[in-house]
Image (tube, rainbow, N blue to C red; front, side, top):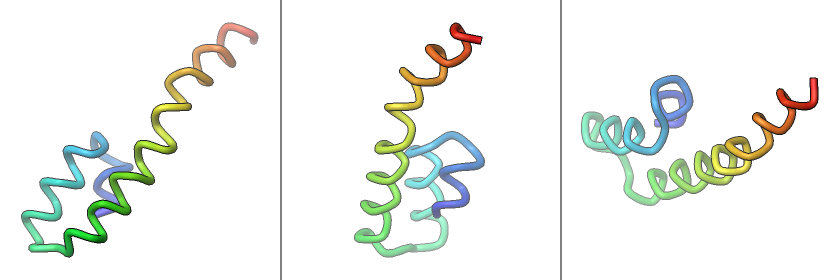
Length: 53
């Protein structure tokens, strides 16, 4: 689930993968949390970094 979430499009991909493989809902919540913890700050940090270069 994590590799699908990282490589495709995030939380929605993780949810779809979990349904496809009949994955554990607890692991899905961990993956969702991890993706959001990383993605949301990067939405702010990456443009700031690019603007500074």
